[in-house]
Image 1 (cartoon, rainbow, N blue to C red):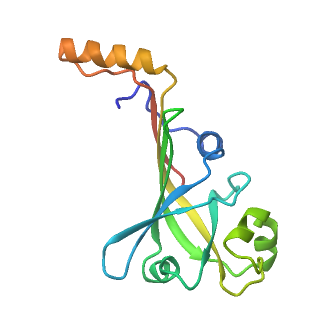
Image 2: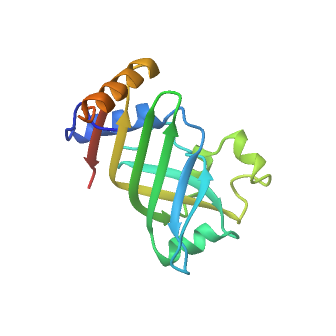
Length: 174
């Protein structure tokens, strides 16, 4: 996908645009580097109801499973959101940390989390993970599928790649 616009928005605009693109996506793919060196991705649910002022995303995960060990070994993570129906894609790079904050757990907890952690937010197995966003990239296409196909067909016939298939931005938060 080529870009119609590429720019660096203000931090406030960047937070707003990122949240606009990811707020309705139920699951993100959360990628860590395993101690064996390989990248491991797993679906996780973002717990935020908005992006924090310090530009963090929050997740709950089990202390008994691999991701927590991975984060202790290497805090660099990638979180990917995709909404193919809206042609919106977001890739977020950041640093993750375990946060021991009972009040924050209670604040972020929802009934949906009981499916994974039936003993609630006070369960010692529940790890609260904060991902501080360093940078993000997004691709957002407003054109209908038919318009996109016409632009791609035109590009195939002319030999010139399409240059107006949506908006792309690289956002540096820190």
